[in-house]
Length: 240
Image 1 (cartoon, rainbow, N blue to C red):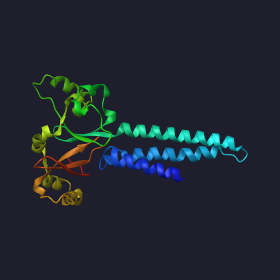
Image 2 (cartoon, rainbow, N blue to C red):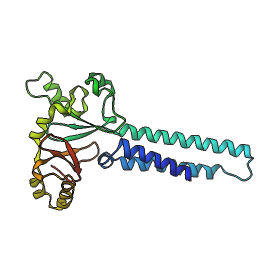
Image 3 (spheres, one colour):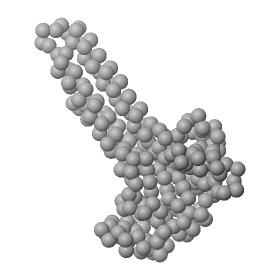
Image 4 (cartoon, one colour):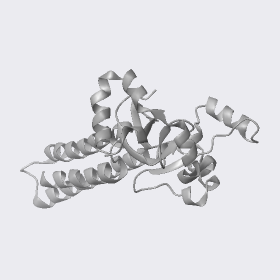
C-alpha cells in the first residue's frame, strides 16, 4: 500500500508539476488522466494479489506469482503514463485572436521536420508559448490552409506555421480584449476576475485578455500585458 502511495506521489509530481501545470490540468483533462492512471495501478495490484494468493502455495510459488503481479502493475503504470504523456500540452499558441492549447497527440509527427528548428522537438517540460502564422488571402498557401481548417486541422496544429511568440507580440497587443467589457458580460465571474487581476499588482488598464481554447474544453481566458504581450495569468471564465 505504501508503495502505491509513493508511486502516486511521484506520478502526481510528474503530471501536475511538469506536464499539466495549472491551468492545463483543467483545460486538457490532466486531472482525470492522472486519476485513471493511478486508479488502474492501485486497483490492479491488490486485486490480482487477492486472486492468486493462497496459504497452501509454496513460498517459491508465491514469490513467482507476486513477481508477475508487480510486472503487470509496472506495465499498466507505464501504459497509463504513455497515454498521459501523449495528451500532454506542448504549446500555448497565439492563433489570430485567441490562445489554443496544443497537445502532443494532436500533432502529426511526420510534419515536424517542416517546423522551424527550435520547434521540431516537442517539449517534455511543459507547454511553450509560440505564435502561429495565419495565412491571408494572396498568400501561396491560403487556399490549402482554408481547406485544412475546414477539415478540422487548425493552423496551430501545423508545424510549418509555428513562429516565435516574440515575432507576434504587436499582433497580440492589437487583438487584446477589454476586461471591463468582459466583466459587464460575465457578472457571475466578477469576483474571480478581480481576484486574478489583484494578484498581479498592475493597473487593470494595463491588462487585456484573450480566450483560451483546448482540445477538450474552453471556458478560460489568459490575462495579457498590454505593454509587452506577456501572459500574466489565467482565469476560468468564458471569454467569447
